[in-house]
Structure formats: C-alpha cells, structure tokens
Length: 585
Image (spheres, rainbow, N blue to C red):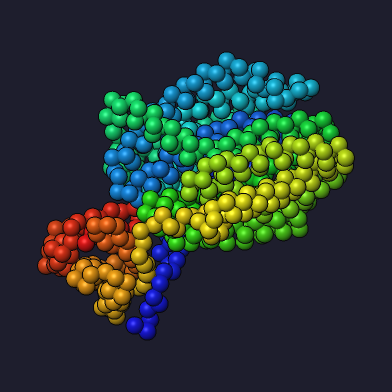
C-alpha cells in the first residue's frame, strides 16, 4: 500500500489531454499557418493591395469558421455527452442530423453569395476600385468551395472524437500543404493572380475531404447514419436545436469577431486610412497565431469535459480545465514576448519593407501583442462554460468580447489618441472582458447560497458519487484497492454483503486487466463509486490499449464471469479511447 495515494488524481485525464492536444494544435496550426502564409505570398507576389483585399474579406472566412464551430464542435460535444451516457442511438441521430443540415446550409450559402458577391465586396470595401476588383476575384472561388470546406472542417471534429486525433490532424496538414504548394503554382508559375490563391485553398480542401471519407468508408467511425430520425420531425428538430444551442456561444464568439472585423475595418480606414489598414493586416496574423493554441487547448478540453459531464465526473472537468489553462498561459506568454522582441522581422515577412509602413506597423503589432494573454483566457472561459452547458454565461462572454467592449473602446480611444488609441482598444477590450466575467461569476456564486464553490460553477450536490480513487494497475493495488473500498463503504453505512460484492467485482476487473496486460505496462485507473436508492454503481475508466472486458470468457479472461455473477449488469464502452466499464451491484 505504500505506493497508493488514496484519492483522485488527474493522471488519466492529463494523459488523454496530452494525447489529443498536439494533434488538435497541429490541426489549428496547419489551417492558421496556411492563412498566414497565404497572406505572405499574396503580399510578396502580388503586392500590398492583394494583402489588403484578403484582409478585408476576413469577416467572410470568420463567418465560415463560426459555422463549423456551431455545427461541428456543437454536434461533436453532444455526441460525446451521449457516449458518456452510453446512448449510441442518440449519437447516431445527431451525426445524421448534422450532415443533413450542412447539406442544406451549403446550398443556401452558395446561392446567396453568388447572387450578391459584388454587393458584399462593395459593402466591405469603399473608395478603392483596385482592392475591390482583387477581393471579388478572390471571393468567387471561395464561394464555390463552400460545401467542401464546411463538410471537411465539421467532420474533423467527429473524427477526433472517434479517438483518431492524429488522423484528423494529418488530414488538415495534407490539405494545407497542397494549398500552399498550389499557391506558388497558381499565383507564381501560372500567373493566375489573387484568384489562384483562392483556387489553391479549394483544391487543398478537396484533397483533405477525399482522405476524410476513408474514415467513414473503412468502418472506423463509431457513429453511423440513422435516417429513422427523419420519421420523427420533433426529435429531428430537437437534436438540431440542441447542437445549435450548445455550439451557439462558441460560434457567436467567432461570428461577432466577423462583425467586429467589419466595424474595425471601417474605424481603422476612417482614422488611419490605408496606412492603418496595412498595419492591421499584420495584427491579424498575430491573433491567428494565438488562436492556434486557443483552438487546440480549448477544443481538447471540450472533448474531455463533455464526456465527464455525461458521467457527472466533476473532478475530471476541473482537471481538464486546469491543463488547458496551463497550456494557454505558457503559449500566450511566449508569443507575446516573441512578437514584442521581433516585431520588425515579423512585419517584413509580409512584404512590408518601406520605413514609413514599418514605422506605422510596429506600435500596432506590439500593442496588439499585449492583449493576447487576456484573449486566450476569455476564449478558454467561453469554451469551458459552453461545454458545461452554461449557455447564458458563455454567450455573454462572446458578446462582450465581440462587440460590447471592443467597438466602443475603439471609437473612444481612436478619437482621443488617433490610430494608436485603436490599437490600445484591443488591450482594453480583452482585459475588460476578463474583469466583467469574474464579477458575473462572483454574483452567481453569491446568489447560489453555497451551491457553487468557485468559478467552475459545478453543482457538486447534483452528484451521486460516494468516493473516487486513482491508482496504477500494480499487483499490490490489485489486492489493496478492493479491500480499502470495501472498508470505506462499510464505515459509511453500506451493507457488508453489498460492500463485499463491490470489492469482489473490482478485484475481478483488476485481475482481468492484469491478465490482459495492457501495453505491457501499468495502466492508470480511475474508479468512482456512485449510489442511488436501489444500487451501487462502479464507474471504471482506464487508459491503454482498447479492450472489451465484457467479451466472452476465455481461459485467460475467466475473472469477468465472477463479476457478471455478482452484478446486476456489466457494460463496456470506449469513449475518446478510454476503456470504460459500468458495473451495477
């Protein structure tokens, strides 16, 4: 027993977080670096007018990203919750409803945008016919590629949730490598101009989409089509409404960035002219840079917290948030210091080489960099409250971050201090968002009268958990843990016979695990004991190689027959690559 620490620890959560973090960051990195390099290549090959045209059309790209958050991340989050509850049928129906909605949405977006493409460009760009023409040429291929982009980016969330994080990241990396290679071919070799950059993006997404299909065709997907949901319109629209509302706050956060970009473009052009717009075109990539880590850290957290929420594993939710916070704290500090120290080098990478333009861009970039740690924290909180179904609070953060604080502060500080005042408004808006959210959570906690202990806002009273424990699957623990839990249950009023059956069931599982010898090393195990009026529920989660512990007995796996004999039910499932066992006594 000397090696056993009685109580819960974050080992299984942290290892799963680490497993998913790098592929998720790489996915965001591939996408965002492609956007940055697109801008660099356009600026160097075609000039600053092309760079400005792509920058001015960024609200449209941001809108698409918002839709993938709503329909991709929203759907995958509630699929994860359904899996946490062992509800495979609901997971399949969510998957089916999502793809049907994406098909309809693609048709609507293509039709509307093709009809009004020129008017949309005119709305975003005023007073410069050259930039207008460049933007229009870039926009048309972008519109045509709508269905490929939406299906690819939304389905990536599902592939990741199917315990294939590396495969999902490889798809996006390949798609963007193709994009960047074709950028050079189309814009440089074939001299297609700015439209070549847009067609390169479409072609890259198409390659990624073809690779993505292999996941579903090969049968590796854990979700299936279930068109029976169409026979139940109320259920269908209920499912659509659910992933719409779950994803809304995250999508709203990015949608309002679209609105914010539109107003900021107008304010910057009004106060700083096209010199100001050139400077802002350098600020956008530094925000994209931190968004790689925000996306990676937050979306990894969401997958884990959604499953833990379905299981009412509140310790697991806290562990996932803390890990995400530590990742973003380090990333944002490094990026901020790096941008401030190497501003001129970063600026010149975008083809901005005149002393006049560099002098204008330096304060823009350095001041904007100071806002990045607060931007990271505000979006982490937004995604956290979204995943824990605090819809009103996450939506509030989205609105605060999007327009309520940013636009007024840009107008006020811009009119008082000129274009540098606009750059300082980024810092003011992000710091203000964090302060307001802190005040709101304090008010919620105070009104709860002790129901919520901290900013996590988790109702730990709404939990049937008796105790939980984490440990390694060593031989010593295989005998010591069941004895400890039996003693614990008896000392807390559980009937001795029932407590003994709980201990025997856990011992049988641990014996089964030892015989299977996952990965030939000690596995990390979380055991939670929960109770209701009729039974004790043993919830077991372990990492390592996936293995169905309830499979038919063999000479090597005889312990499971003992577990079945003393239990009401034994259910196995694989969620996010965890082995999960539910035993009811």
